[in-house]
Image 1 (tube, rainbow, N blue to C red):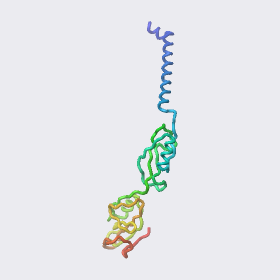
Image 2: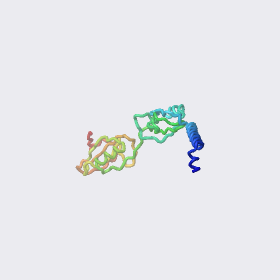
Image 3: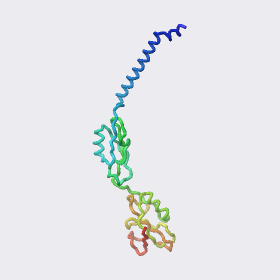
Image 4: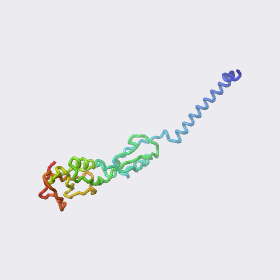
Length: 203
């Protein structure tokens, strides 16, 4: 009964109230200290770096006490200047702490080269989607005598025969020389277009 009376005594209740007040004060002071040391109240708005060159990026971020890191170059985008920023993280308008790194993706200087696949004797239905998926454009369709109709006999670019493994700039136009199903085919001895056997077809 003595302990029960002590718990509900005026002295104990006063001490308990003081302890709770001290706990609240210490918690508040701790939060204030944490807020101060981590700069929780200082936020910097991320600027829009799109299309800026690296020299401009450095100046802009230095003024805002931010840093940057280049992640990689993406596929060439003709809508952006070469070597300019085409993507950033965090995005423009977000708020970050001082000295935060902004991760950048740059636009290359031009289209990259792509390896020509082996499409000889593949059908036109197979060749065209393959070339388009690699970023090439389909140019002229030329027919020559061959036993297989619409089979790929040659790939050409600017009049020159392409071989599997050759590298060509992305978005280049590739002409397809196809069999017409009429007879035998003999590979040309030169790379020139315009032989009497070629039958260009406008697409």
